[in-house]
Structure formats: structure tokens, C-alpha cells
Length: 365
Image 1 (cartoon, helix red, strand yellow):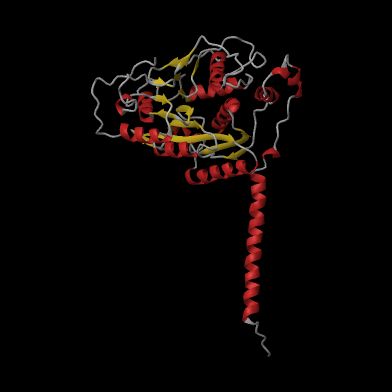
Image 2 (tube, helix red, strand yellow):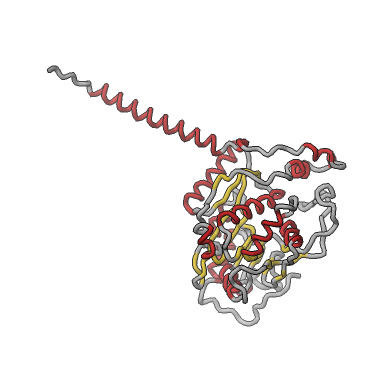
């Protein structure tokens, strides 16, 4: 029998070609997956063109027009999900405090600091704290793809991001809340309490757990909604304001009582009530006011807590405004930069921190 040998250079060439073809196949496959992953308009909620018939519609700013065109849109595809974050619906009651943090895709530094400080997942006095960041889409084209990939990498490392395929903007904060409420109803219905807040607040979550645990009804089955209470106010009609709400969006000149959106605490029961009420209340772009509307429809009220300081702390002049002794008893203060947050958390968590009785929290002036 004659045996034919393949010359070594030819063999190496064929082997290299095979490896190249394998990589090309994998790259093509990955590219196809990326196209699907980042194709924002695969699902698209159509404009409500009848919005253009609203009185003086053409005089409104562009972002107000867009809000009115798409006000009816409430359901968007999820890009990142963590359905078992709470251990599934049946085990979600094991979560004592669920931290729900609103964060835009580009706020990587804030998320990283929070993971290492007040939003660290842990047991405090035997009570479980879990963390979720909720986000949409920022930018367009390649920028949006890069930010999406950033969230994917974070998600893979930390398993803590919910992302939907909608534009992450100030006027879509209410939409973000509604999408989260729907997710929570499906995946985490029995978490006892929620903290809902921004990624630039300093939340003393250890104090929060202790405060909630000391309540007479500390299983989350009763109404609770506390924060910085705002009442006897109405829509801002000045077009130059970030919070501008024209009569075409909200006709009433008064808002129900609500808590400032920088951060508030609520029970699992109240989360469920707000979600149920939201199904029949049209969206308002100011998310904290919208939560107040849902409470009002249910016949419930938010309450004030003196240790929630979304307007900041009043600290006397000629005193270090970042002295940890001013912050050791608070529940929440707005606002902190990432470096300030990191340092403050480690200072107040230091068991050797000693403060004199002269350090008292004052009402914001």
C-alpha cells in the first residue's frame, strides 16, 4: 500500500485556514447577536399623531411634543434582566430592603462607588439588603452601543442591572418607574421594603434597615411611604425650567402631596398599590409627583421624615460641611460626588468614630 504524505508547509497552511474560518464564523455570529442586541427599533411604539391636535401644540418645546406623542407607550423590551434577583417570587420575602437606584448608562463611576458603599449587598443585623440599578438607553449609534456594552460587562460582573429599550432621559423617569414596578410585581412581589432613589444621593442604608426593623409593622404588609414631603405646590409653568409642565400635559394647577424623588422609603404593600393605581393614571413626566398621584388615587398619603434631606443639610458656617458626625444619623442626603460618597461611607461606618453632642442635624434653611 502506498502512503501519501502531506508536505508540512501545506499541512500548516490548511490548519491555519481552518482556524481563520472558525474565527470568522464566530465573529459573524457575534456580529449578528450584536445587531439584534442593539437594534433599538426592532420594537417601536408608534406616535399618537392625534396629540398634534392639542391646543397650541406647535408652540411647545420639542421634548414636550415628544412626551405627548409617546405618552401612551408603557411597554418596552428588556435588554438586561435579573429575574432571580430576589430568589424568585416565592422567596422574595427574604429580601428585607431592596435598593432600587435610578442610573443612566454613562454613570459608571457612581454605580461603582455605590456597590462598594451604601448599596453593597449584605446582611445588616441579619436582614438582607439587595441592589438593583434601573436604566434605559443613552446616546445613539456607536455611543449607544458602547454604553450598552458597558452595562453588559457590569451586569455580568455584578448581576445588578435592569435595562429597557427606551431613551433614558429626565422626562422618561416616570416610564422607568412604571417599568420597574411591573418587573417587581412579576419577580420580587414580596420584598418587605424598597428604597427608591437617585445614584447621586448618600443613603445611610444601615440606618434605614434599623429604622424599618423598629417599626411596629416591620414585615412590609402595611402602608409606608416616607421621604422629604412636598405639598401645596403645583406644576411649574415657566418654559425655562427643567420641571416645566404646560397645561397641555397637566391641566390641574395643584399636585397631591408627594416626596422628593431623590430618595424615599416605601413598603412592599405600597409598591403593589402604586403599581395597581398606575395602570389607570396617564403618565406625568415628573416621576415623584406621579407617585404621589398614585397614592392619592388609592386614598393614601406620603409622610415626612426629618432625617431624609433631599434638599441637603444645613451646617453652620466655619464648620467642615463633610464632617461625618453630621451624617451619622441621617437616612438620606442629596447630593454627593463619587469621591465624597466613598470617603463619607467609610468614615461613618468606622466603629471608632466619636462625635460630641454638639453635632446635631439642623433643618435645611
